[in-house]
Length: 372
Ligand SMILES: [Zn+2]
Image (cartoon, rainbow, N blue to C red; front, side):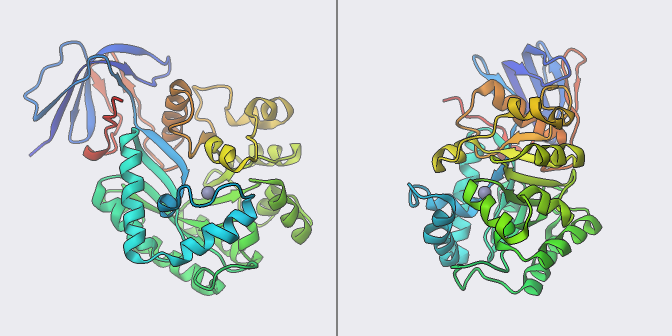
């Protein structure tokens, strides 16, 4: 039997080409908007009174670690490398299947409550299949990557992998889960960052991601110490190093990119590599935040569509849905969805006034009903 939901009397933020904002009703059948207008009527199975509320597309969280939800508040006042080595890595290594499940369930519940319907998440080295199961069970939409770590100092034994094992386990998850639940659950490669991965692993990931047509989700240039370590080891700036190994392109998302030089910005723009801006994370760890405008003025970044919001931008927000202005957030969230980071091909938009809409909702559990 078809499921019909009628959202009545809201202020509809359409995210169409004109950024139209209209008052009216939205009719959803089987997870898709089928009508937008005034006095829409239907024998609905569920009616939501949206008087005084905004009705808008679900936000897209472009960088998160669902496995870290339970660590909140347990690692303050530390710089990135110490934060990882002293707190986050040991806690990740201590995860069991049960604790990972609890962490993912809580993280997804919080995301849904905040109106986020879709996420790109990097998990830890082990138990990623539990997170995939939770995504499947909750009706959430996500692209999930098993964290890859085959080198590094002070890495707990539970996280340090052999290169071959890291790749074969990632491939097995991709083969089992990518595109499941009608495309709602997706997988990607998630090498942690250049410091945690051998050159051999990164080269193979670059090749496999292209041949398997999946994303690469990694971190880059989050703080200065990390950049210095990469440069000392490889002789290249972080983005240049990753690009030289094939980790660049429209299927690649680099989280953070706070500390880039002009050449790196030009590389990102030329290769159409995506960057997730994570202001709340950067503020917590005290690393500053990259200036989009400064980057655009000094480099080729405008080629990524940063200033032309009608174009799918390559620069989106992660870790941020509670901390940035609603206007910015709705633009970033929807634009990211259109750009297709986390679910690839869903670029359709609502069409107010035509009586027809075609934007896919994230699912029954992910409608963003938080009115607080
Ligand atoms: Zn991260």
